[in-house]
Length: 104
Image (cartoon, rainbow, N blue to C red):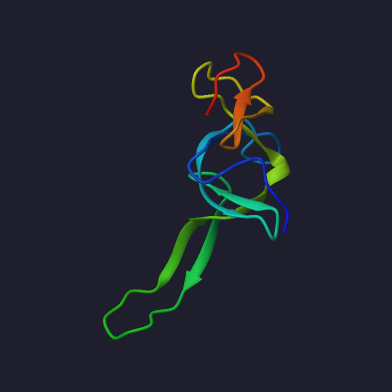
């Protein structure tokens, strides 16, 4: 299983594609595929069939998956897109911002 640089709940910026420059929160991470789903970005249309009597079907917009390499983490303190640095402590690793040194 491959590790990704982002976690669920992180704020990221899209680096390439039709949504380049947009920011959003990571809703879901799939390390096996190397993909993430970002809130409000990469919207796709799905045709939904009604499953029960009285349920409405139709065309629904939903977030599609992006490759994790196309997103960069945004530091909560300085607000800049940043690469991660890691600091090893006794109880585990901490993620650091390369710009301001803030842990998150």
